[in-house]
Length: 463
Image (cartoon, rainbow, N blue to C red; front, side):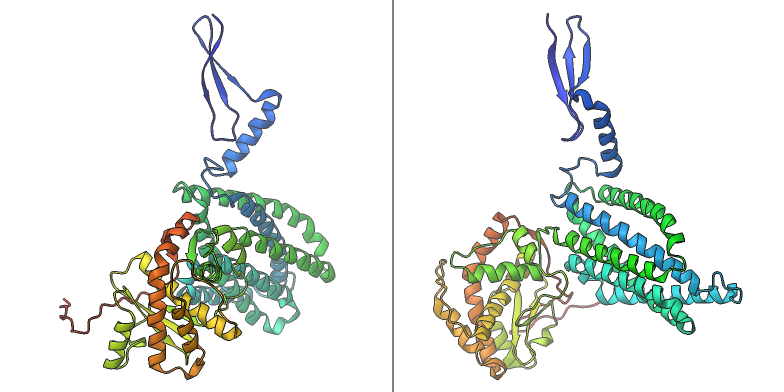
């Protein structure tokens, strides 16, 4: 009886498969399909096991490899410039100066660390919630600020009288970098982990960064004697590696394709959808390519999501108009042309779809406002059966600009709601078909939630 193949298996899709052959004598022989390069393949498999998440590439997002390549380059460059800054800081605190005292250097370092800790707390309080929503922009911001801090440290020895103040400023910058960089890295790790393997992805990212830092350490040992006493070479290397650092960081964040909706991505998708004849829905890859990662998204009106009820209603007649303009919704929208804002109150029982619908209705007002500002005529025929007169009426109201009366604003909200009621069901369905994740969003609402009724509500006892 000839040998027969009874099983074939592999450890992940990229590992060489193993073949199980049943021999004529009844034994099972295990062989590999690796060919002549088995030693190289074994080494590559070991490297993947040590530095890549288990199950790679199926266990991570499609943009994982490209992001990690650019992230590795930026980490190496940052380590090199950090070495240059460390040398400058040690010189500034008096290393090599016979007149410097250990106590003075210790006090300077403690002040630097103390101000950094205060800066870390304040930044986390002020911007903590937005780090999830705009992870890519804050990630790039952190690296730009890190380079700024390193530049400050490099110039610190030139101003010995102000060294302590300069060191404190640098400490604050680096503490903000630690908060923004760490938090956004966690958000990106959550995006990359596709098998609920966030811990594994994070651990392997730490291993990769450690290897890069070790390589940068070896290079730093070689560079340090060369730059000592040579400021021109120091600044040349700083600008060279800073340029590479910023470029690789920009490439890293722009290659990430987030499938969840934040305010920027929703605005891009909605404006394309409302402005196209065929109501086109952009894919996550297309929308992410247009998402700004350096500056905030520019919109005609500012959207405040999850505000207090008092932002919309000041008097009883305002409440009647507000509820009439927002009938049968789990949210209330108010338009304020004087402040250039759209304010949205969320109901206590609103769902993720309700939040998206509220923002979608706000984008209808944004779209009409943009056309008014461009003084262009709407030539879009609506394929979903919406009466164009609604859109024209909104444009006519918004054309009044800051001269809009409160009644005009409520009427614009009512008309945008009619359009939203007709467009939104197909819009949300096509979003999912295009690959967007709808069950969770990063639209960044504040925590205010409300219940409302014109007839009055029973008081709830608070114990």
